[in-house]
Amino acid sequence: RSIKELQTISFVATGLKSPAEYSDIDKNNIAEEGDMRLLKTVGLYGANASGKSNIVRALEYFIQAIRKEPSSESNLSLLCDPFLYQENSNYTESYFQIVLIIENKKYRYGFTVKRNLNYYFSLVEESKEIITNEWLFGTKDKNSGEFFIRENNHVNKDKLPNQHVIPALPYKHTLFLTHAVAHDNQGVCAIVKRYFYGAGSNYSDGIERFRKNSISLLQKEENKNFLLDFLSSFNIRYNDISFEKDTIKPNELLIPQEKIFFYKQFLTKKNEQVQIKLNLSFHESAGTKKLFDLAGLLIYAFNTKLYSFIIIDEIDSNFHPSLLIKLIELFNNPKINKSKSQLLFTSHDTNLMSPSIMRRDQFYFTEKNEDDSTKLYSLADLKGIRNDADFAKQYLAGFYGALPILTDYINENISPNE
Image 1 (cartoon, rainbow, N blue to C red):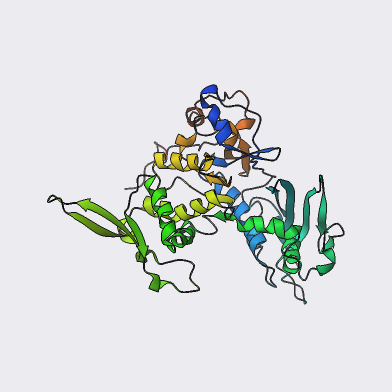
Image 2 (spheres, rainbow, N blue to C red):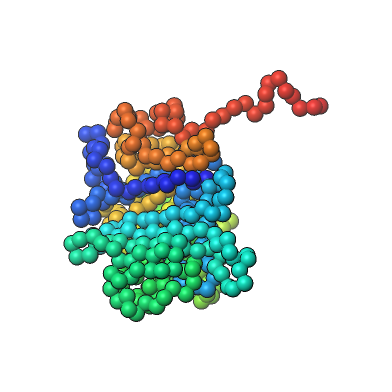
């Protein structure tokens, strides 16, 4: 609702080089995929109400729409939320596009969507939202080419393998990508859609929804040590973790919090060893709960392709700055993040803004234009910034913009009536 013009976040590393004393940053923070150099982490900074969350939510809603199965009911309403301060916003299309590298092949997929103004007046069944354009381009052998192009409900799929098994679109709101996968789950559309099953976010999924990944590690005794070691690396040490299996129902994604227990041993004054049982919900801090919720997700992400792209809004909430730095460093560490998973996060914590932790092209900023629309830009795009600069100090000094404009709460000449 605050996005008026096209905004782009790129995970493609620029040609800048880190200072000599931080040369390992260029090796660790960049993943090589064929001839592409891709950033593993990107942080989004800016004042409150500048549009950071709107940027990540737009991406999250885009991902959700692709992951869902085709249905007679539209699930695109959240994508039809154009710039709020404009006339005739109901006529405005929303544009979404993503460029992916999958198995060293590049794919470009996107669509435009808008509200269907005929929905409330038509005598026949109509979709509340309609896809006006949709496209998929990608690598074919050694060349890049078109797979399909859509305009309204007409799809040119002549260049799509196995296109003969895919019937016409049933509804104006149906994504052709997901429609094609429903009829051909081995084709190029399926390859692209599978990528999005590996995308997760704490806004759409809820940070506590990530907990199912940590719980799944506890299903097998041999995997429990992965979780204990992960928590221990953040100086959160327990002897054991358990949950009550009889509380699990087949249709539940989550185990109730009060059924997860930590165990810690200590010595009494009489040198007797005692073990206490700590309830995650009642005895642990919000930061410990959040780290536990993230632990399983990150362990899977670092070691498998199960989660290839993660979005965390306000990643710094409930985390000590040192813990947050370590979390980002784990993502950027090729020995830990073996699958080259990527992270997009928003934050206000400037402790990360150091050339010893992240490169200039790993920082993006949002700020409001005069018409209250959001402007997104990269620190790498700003001229005159040294690669060894104190990014945090310069940011807080206003060199990069994206800071709140603050005034006195009450005019000194005006006082409330007594």
